[in-house]
Image (cartoon, rainbow, N blue to C red):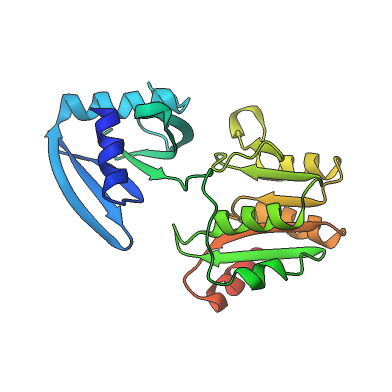
Length: 242
């Protein structure tokens, strides 16, 4: 059923799958652009089995149902095809756990941007390059596209939670607070390796914002993202952190 679920979402062009706990059942939703549509309702036992299955594949703690968890994995489909998934779980006050699965962009296909010429001429000079937009707007894909265009055969280090787009030409680090690998610590570590480009997946708090700013002010080229619908909002949020 899990494989069928992923394939159905792909066939419908969905970007996200929601498995939401609701009393004695689970509600299954697909998101396409801004619309979230109810697909079906499934029994509690089947829903829990699906949730546990995906958590196990993503290396998440299957026994923990209260704390927020993040993970990512490749999911094998038919004919040797695989889809990269990003997972996020959260438990409510009653211990009922819900799951959101993001279906990530196919890395074997080149992205087509309507502003391709601008990307080719983009000045990746030293300093902080901040990419702002809502969830699913392509911020990470755009950063990686620029990195591949302008930093070929150079030292590129990425720091993400979790790693989304895998590129064998980059050194990719994953945040793990349990073992002390926070955004701040990994940024400090990365600078010792003298990267030509440092990509920080997302700025979520003051500590990360300050670490990113320090790296950019010491002469490094840094790409990072913030969630914001408007440009002025992203600047205001960042200024409040630093």
